Length: 221
Ligand code: GAR
Image 1: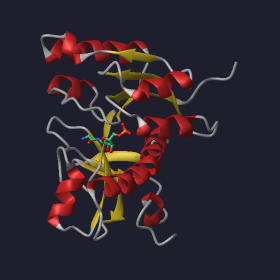
Image 2 (image 1 turned 135 degrees about the horizontal axis):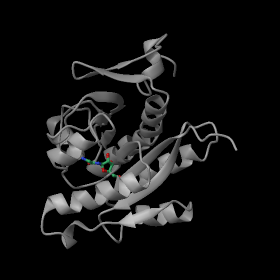
Image 3 (image 1 turned 90 degrees about the vertical axis):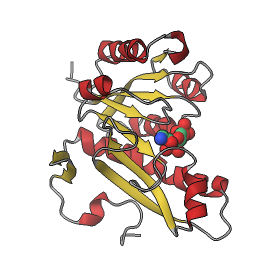
Image 4 (image 1 turned 180 degrees about the vertical axis):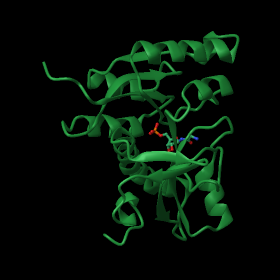
């Protein structure tokens, strides 16, 4: 029997799960260095659960509404992740704030995707706020999670233009298309142990050319 050396990831979702789908697709490639151990949703009707089931991935619903205290909700998530032998937790449209206790117990093993170029536009309604601010570029960020919302060492970012006639919907679509490239890329770098944190900043090992860690913009395209 060959030893399974793939990184086991757990994905936490609350909704559509298109980022989850991009991770599922990446994991279907036998050369991808990670596998999906479990998908956990805090919503029973999250479409991401349908996506996971279609691909025979273990799912679990842990509804925050069923718990009086946030700590109990998180203990259940933590237990499910540990039982599934998860090594990296990926938040993909998971719309609950996690407490310091949870964040600390997954220190440097918990990452999130956010639909803006952090530290700009933390929180909700990112695309509408970006348009109203008149920024000419927006994008998405993958970062390690810290106890502050949408903060923590930035791993990867990808930029997209903001066009004059964009609505939050058209911009969201452009950003989301890029998110789908960025998440599998970040997981690959993590699984291949290319990411290290030095003084709260992410550095990459074995970088020959800085274009290597850029999706967009890159001089390669
Ligand atoms: C994505 O745009 C993700 O970046 C965002 O929610 C969307 C989920 O889409 N996350 C946040 O805003 C977290 N602060 P998906 O369910 O189709 O992957």
